[in-house]
Image (tube, rainbow, N blue to C red):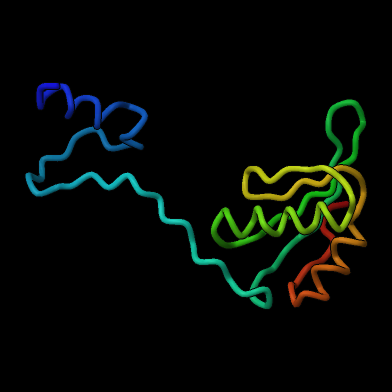
Length: 120
């Protein structure tokens, strides 16, 4: 592959993230998005919501986790096992099928997380 083709491929629209052109000859494009360090449980301030999805189904949503995605997914897995329910981790929040707010808050506070109910 010629060098010009490689440069065009590296600077595709998908990889630019807002950088269009730089006049600085020493500019180096850095595409890495650093995830924040995972805070200790005592520093986390989590909110537990009840949300309704299409078809009237209810889900418990945990928001406010600060840290790397792997730690959020591990916490989500523990909460899904605790509730005996399915769910997912996406958009930086944990979604668990069903209304498990009280059970989730009790478990989180027992593990030293700051957690409370939010929403209406």
